[in-house]
Image 1: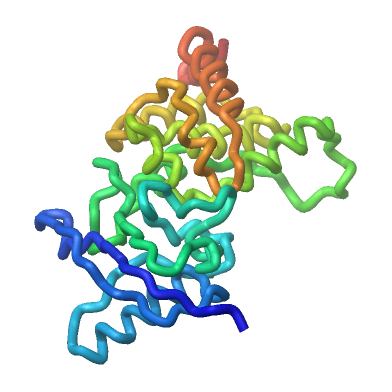
Image 2: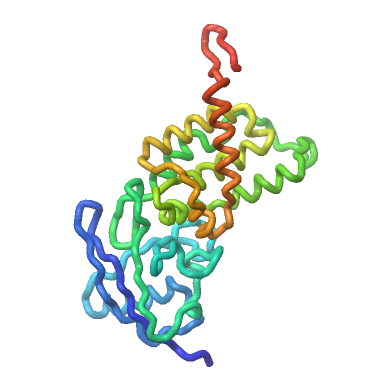
Length: 262
């Protein structure tokens, strides 16, 4: 049987966005290395509840690395030390007995703290609502091969669609930029035939909403790609920028008086 470990957690505790926060130390004793990180926090919280203390608030849902709900900065690294791994899929065997871990929420103005390690990522939802969809009528489902898509485009679109919207890219970026997330959501549609009719209104509207939410700009630090649990590539940002320039310079929305598109 694997040896259990003991850790010290330095956890950011904050009642709400308007309150000041502070780090509080908690012991995590007799932790199985086979536990996930969130299971370890469950154990710590059970101990706090038994003592009549307020448990540590943290985000979680599927706990299978799919939903993007989990997210915290573990000792300076979004999602922790293991590459392409969400917090919920991080196991305690990644840490050593006696280690001290610092747990913080995503740090970004556009992600206000709700409580402790939980932040409001509604800004991402509003960016998607601004244009991250296909609204043109597509009719009944077609046969799989009725609308040919080059394999390279299909592969790149699937890679972009792997983004789970967790926000690690924002937390890692020194500018708190959301461009990796936004570019992935734009690319997954821009690379497919169904996304072409709204391609340029989409990129303009989503970038405008991203700016309105208060995210920073990209200065090519590439920290976002390094911490992304799904390996979203920076090339999506380049694709988004090309589309945005084209939309800004040549695209004109249709008007009711017969105006056309450029």
